Image 1 (cartoon, rainbow, N blue to C red):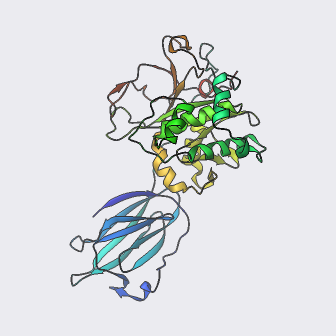
Image 2 (image 1 turned 30 degrees about the vertical axis):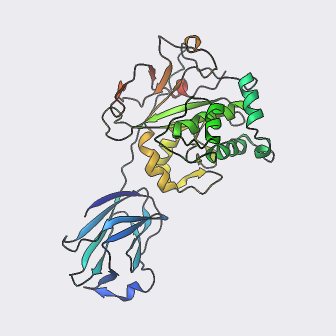
Length: 371
């Protein structure tokens, strides 16, 4: 049964786990199984029941797409297991003996992952585009700080980066993700009050709570909707929702994913969304996912990479009646589009129209410092 799994990097050599390497069939390692389901190791994590042992298929091949040049992979049955350290262009094979039938010849074939190389312009900022942010002294944020104080969370933090990581970590651990339920209102206090009653919500709820808590503590922050290149036709969900915050001491925007508790960095420098996509594509090995938790880079890259194509955010983040919020030519959001890419007008999966965005390919428009 052929399966394609994207995986990450590192190491080489071909090794076996336990005493399995002592068993051979046709000069290749032989492992034993009673049940037909097997687990696959990619990176650090075993994926249970990911493979069906199929002796009737000649040279049954698992195609692995590596994010970097080398990686650990493995195969585990209910009786035995084996581990490989494989690099791009290699194939490694072994046999699986199940019952009285001929052993199943199983092959791992490693191919390079094809990164999506995209670019943006750096034209001078359009004078008619401005993004507004709410201030921490608004009465709403007085209430948020009183109801959900973070003084003890931040007491030992000194840099903006450390403070933001702690606020994100607090947000991440307020509830367990549930992609099938939505909060009644889209503000932090309302969401957190529902959480007290057992509410669990999707990615956008994390992004809202994180934005509001960051704003309450003196940062300019915004919700950012990230979308795939094929958002108009994709059969599965074409989007995810994150937060970006402007770090005053570094004078730059930074990507935050409250659902996964992730801040991407390169060389110790936190990255915005466009920089994150570029860093994964060009310098995967050097990207670090900063977090208060242990986060698997391979797993998160599997999830997020396709979404890092289109970015859009509201032009006005102030707490105002909808009719009073800033728009440009009737558009309420700004979408960052790669140079030469199409301007999307619909999202097929949700049967919705994109008629609310201005489009720009300029990083200076989308990542302008807040005024």
